[in-house]
Image 1 (cartoon, rainbow, N blue to C red):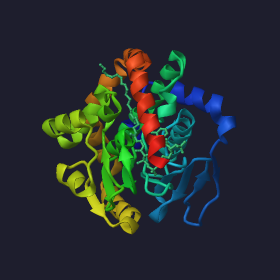
Image 2: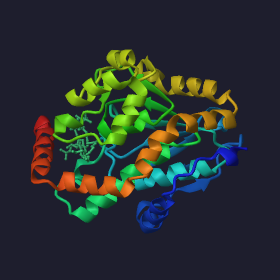
Image 3: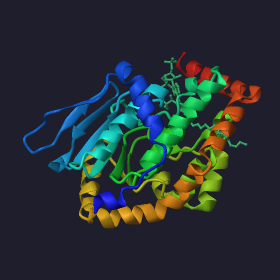
Length: 302
Ligand SMILES: CC/C=C\C/C=C\C/C=C\CCC/C=C/C(=O)SCCNC(=O)CCNC(=O)[C@H](O)C(C)(C)COP(=O)(O)OP(=O)(O)OC[C@H]1O[C@@H](n2cnc3c(N)ncnc32)[C@H](O)[C@@H]1OP(=O)(O)O
């Protein structure tokens, strides 16, 4: 039954190609024997995968210091790890969290979008699309344990999950802040936000590039729970147990019913979306905006 409802994204080529091209350089994740309960773990350089409670849940810890920016290599590695979990019938749910202090993910890696050539922008954007499609259409129960700052692409990752738990800390802000960088969230980022918090709240959040602190994120519905920092993972596992009480086939079919139309909008125009991104990001004015933003990030330190 699970096979019958498994959603398939017709874009496996990137993952396979990415795995072949990058596997050696990345230190391909390898399964290894784990605990006596049948749980397994594997390690890769920047995505730690550990068994969670009861062996049916994996915890994916993002470890791309200092801020888990989503570089092309990191995205590829994450996708390989996710594919392994999707294909392993032992696992029904995944908690996604960060191994970097105070940051869940700083979002897309600005260095992949600044000062590169069109071919590189196209390759990068294809990987970003793949990340979203894979997560958004995942058959697994995904719970985001957001233990730190979660802007832009980090927020997109969290939004693809079925449940979001945010740590109650001043550093834990979340939102699609693209306009603050002088760039624009693509339609599928926007759709994912609208599906979560509604049209009016999204319009305001997107135009103003709002990064919501925990209480406001909870109020607007961007996250489902706000808990003390040291309880984020335990809360995620507890919420997971609730979701795993539902038969997989019924939950998966329902998830597909809710999400397919949104995903199809991108699937039908992936290539056009890549071309749109390449021409947008290559503009002199946009490159200038990114340069200024990167300089601001550096100045903040000095
Ligand atoms: C008409 C057009 C229609 C449609 C549009 C078409 C196409 C769409 C076009 C574009 C869409 C792009 C979508 C983009 C999505 C994104 O995700 S953009 C990234 C947004 N991210 C951010 O704004 C976060 C920036 N970072 C921070 O705010 C902070 O770093 C932090 C709060 C996350 C953490 O703070 P600190 O712990 O204090 O760490 P530092 O700030 O000191 O950073 C350490 C180190 O890391 C570098 N860095 C930070 N973020 C990034 C990043 N996202 N990418 C790359 N590098 C990053 C930072 O510069 C520091 O570097 P060093 O100085 O140590 O070298």
